[in-house]
Image (cartoon, rainbow, N blue to C red; front, side, top):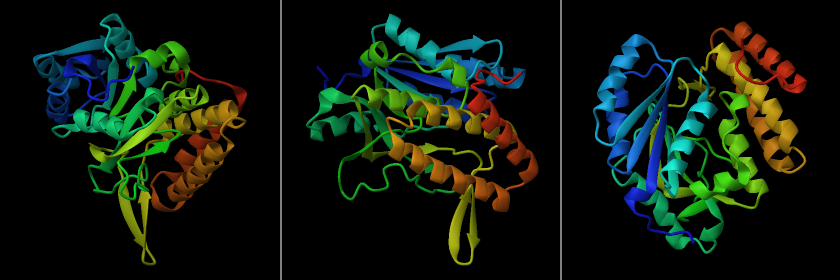
Length: 298
């Protein structure tokens, strides 16, 4: 039975960090007051960042787990999943280190269940995302048209509320992906098992999407995320991996994502710096994706 008004003490938050800046303290506080506890999983940050995390540890109901090296977003998230399982939480709230939750954010996500006739099938509830740097609202949930929610096949990780019992059905996050597309793989596994994913049209999360810049060319506005070459490698490798896994089941999603990816690559070519290095990283990622080479790049 899915409770449309779950108590605060039924929710565990997990935040993955890697060399966070001073904003991490306020970001963690914004989450900690809305959930029973927050598990911060640090992926091998520098000494300066670890000093900030010592301040984070002093926040009430916050525990910091330190990995000695960068084990990837999936492995870090799974540490939070295991903790939430051990404590018998009903929901897991997943956040990036640069995401700031406004007052009432968690309640606003749960509120959509009051309007949902199939709430027993809902495995994940996500917000709309507004980039911190540019103020641009991401396309996820852009077609709300007055509805309290829209359905989607996939969504990025930050600000998600995930029902804990679904991990027993679909498994945890895929460690082998390391970073990038971890969220899409998990979402598509949920959809494959018949679960539904909602975007709350009344919830918004301030979130940093790469190092986004806006460009105006011939009267039209274009975005570039300016991810570094290593992220471009993982993004390409894991996109190919996801396409191989789900093309037969979700061909429409794969084709739409491929179209968006090609637009991203065009943006890299015409709008970003270090184009040759990034395109080389993408080519390497594509090759490794088709070859089935996963895990952390040596």
